[in-house]
Image 1 (cartoon, rainbow, N blue to C red):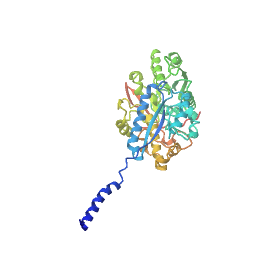
Image 2 (cartoon, rainbow, N blue to C red):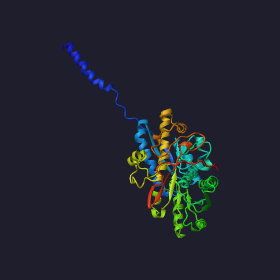
Image 3 (cartoon, rainbow, N blue to C red):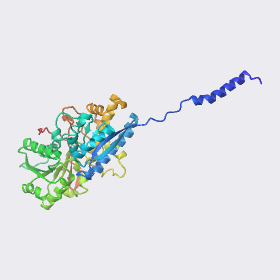
Image 4 (cartoon, one colour):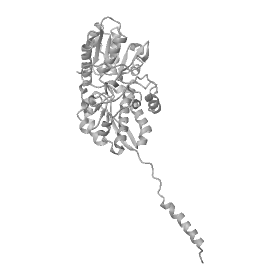
Length: 418
């Protein structure tokens, strides 16, 4: 049979139709995200076990938000790995080597003083920034040593309240009488009292009378005898930077002594959590003070864009947005933003702890902190941000309600090193 030219053409087209599809490359599956584990120090069996659910919630919400909104675009997924340190430096030191060997982390999220005490000599060697949510400790107030904190020292934050109260609240002609309640085991607790004593007696001499410190158990049952001498001297305020049990038991012991003495406390002892143990009536005149946004700031982007959209299952959008949630959300956000900056500079394939560390010293924009802080921006002269970015926010209990004490961040005065 004779095949015409048209027949040859038709056969060629049919053969091409059969061959060409096999030659077309298949669509590549989407690239897998590069996962980085970020170790977090926790405490599920020590003095901060009662606030861990708020810490965990803040961290989870921030990582979920960043992974969805930024990580996917960068090809990165951040996963938290929480360790129970029991707020013990020996436990922190024991956990650290294994975690570093296994994860080669880009950063470590610390819980408090034990992390600083245990890791301050280790993280520079391994080039892993230790990012904290707490205020700074006096023994770490020096040229930066790979420990990054978004807040000045606890005495700085307390001094912000003292300065404001003397100018705006204190109407007596006599000095304001202040005493502290603390424990002498954690170095951070001892350090805070030392710093407060120094600035109260030197900077505010004649305006404040510092009566001393009641040194009590880490988780006390009763402190009536320990605070009795200060009550007899007419103490106006107790300063408690330590933990929830100290605030609760001090308040109950004041009741036993027939007096009401307001407490000035730190961010991790916030009013929302305290109100689950103490009635607001028992907390009349209490204040918290810290270099972070208040838990009553519902208009900030961190609340509207992170917390409301990514809060973990079972968490209440209002009642579980505590000051503790705020401060730990800030430290997680710092890690995420620093990684973001590092990727822009060195690329995702070159990420390292050192690259993340160096990115912390790049300029920080107001929108970077999502309203969680008055501002950020570090130099290598100190572990906490530059003076011009600092400011304390305060809330209080007034007429049985938790309200803001001020409507804008208040100045942090200069205080002497100790």
